[in-house]
Image (tube, rainbow, N blue to C red):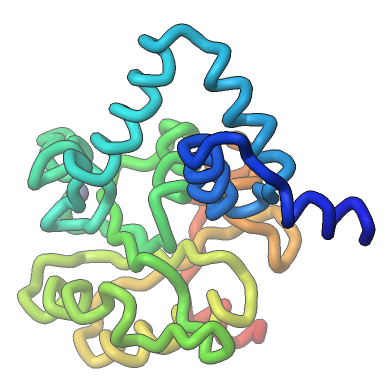
Length: 215
Ligand SMILES: [Zn+2]
């Protein structure tokens, strides 16, 4: 505690140093002490390297956009996956975020497209259905643009709640719904599943209704 208090009241010797430490320590898992270590490291690097880092961070916010069709992170209005003519646009895999897309793409087993929700319904965290891109998904189904929806959210309570909420919205359209048959434990996040298991799960998906009966 004594060390902590001493640190908080630290004289940074430069307002620029203090500013950089303050900004760096806004990142998750980075305390003031780690932030100071990183900033001092950057200070020792050639200017070109620090400039490249700063540029990459600015570009991250100004250049990256979200695909108008699937909401995936993209450098263009329509992402590479949605633009790929080899893919079946009528099979849509519902995932939480871009990390899930990356995990599934790494398996090279899936030839449909995705719909990125941007999270899961979680009342505790204040995330409701309106905070996720569910309306645009239901619209795709409504318009008859979907043959099959694959539910690939993690098997957590939030994931199950979100799946069920979406299922109820699209049930009346009588399209095929499935869920990936994962050989991994309940609660395991999709991005941590190994590629072979995940690839097999996508190929051997099961009707979504079956997962409801299990629960
Ligand atoms: Zn897309």
